[in-house]
Length: 320
Image (cartoon, rainbow, N blue to C red):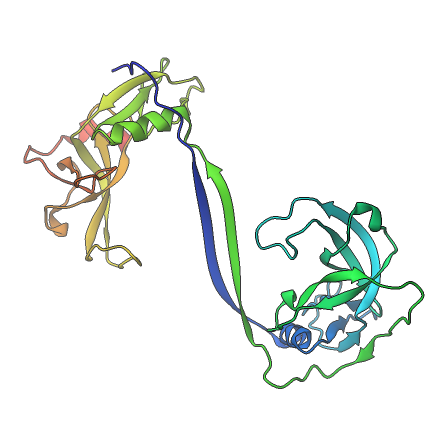
């Protein structure tokens, strides 16, 4: 089957995100609790260097370190880069500079934002100070940003600190998020468009003649473009399978159920699908199945037995 006119290439925004809860050791707990209280803490390494932010193990000796010190809330910019287009959830909504700041009393620099009117107002060696957030909870965001400070002001020294605070922060929830625009490309756009018509469209390699479903636009074996579209199935053969006994979150399917590799008739490799309409312990290799579509569904809900005799092993052995 050759398409008369290719569908418009699909594009859609996609967000991948997951939060995870992290417990804090004594050093990180003291650091974040200190920020909540308006105190910046570092840790002293075996060779006497003060690291801010603090770490729990010496980067040279790998020994555990817990000797906390309080450093100043003013410091010096060691390097910087201008951010003219802030993104979602960055420290400031208006253009700002990313800066590495070596706080007074520290030997290492901390990365944060500097609120400045423009890149001409930022320079390596300039003096800056912490601008605290109006509401602090025990997170790095308790430092809202840095702001320019007067030159020639007092320079603080590192002083020992016990790291003890009331109601210490013992854990944090770290959020990871990736926003991007996804395009499946020409080949998969045609495949998705076919599914909307309850058809499964693959592409044939002009060299080895294998039909790939879903298509990728090129043959991974021969490395040549695949442009000849082929409708496969709808029936196929179970090549291998597994029985799922653990219920997935937000998946409205009762366990146990069977998830299988299914080689659709005419396809050169198997795709994934759930098997239904048969007791899970009766599913087998070689079982002939067909897709079941729900009303308005954009892909088969599951595959069920066709009632045909099982396929001979030699027919599908190369597709396992």
